[in-house]
Image (cartoon, rainbow, N blue to C red; front, side, top):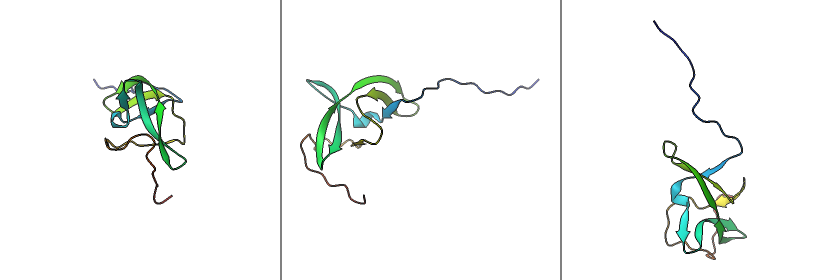
Length: 87
């Protein structure tokens, strides 16, 4: 006997997610570094579900189109001037 089918584990719409390396923590909570006006800004976020198989963490506090530092670069801090090349 054989069978075929589709198993749907999860389906969510309108969810923002980033790699765990993009999320930073300090005494004030979780945040990401958002590029705004040529400067890195501390953008507070609230963490949600984690998908280890996709290496992503659901969060709120960022919006579609925001430019977020996703690389684990510990020397980058809020209020650092930045320039994005190739845009």
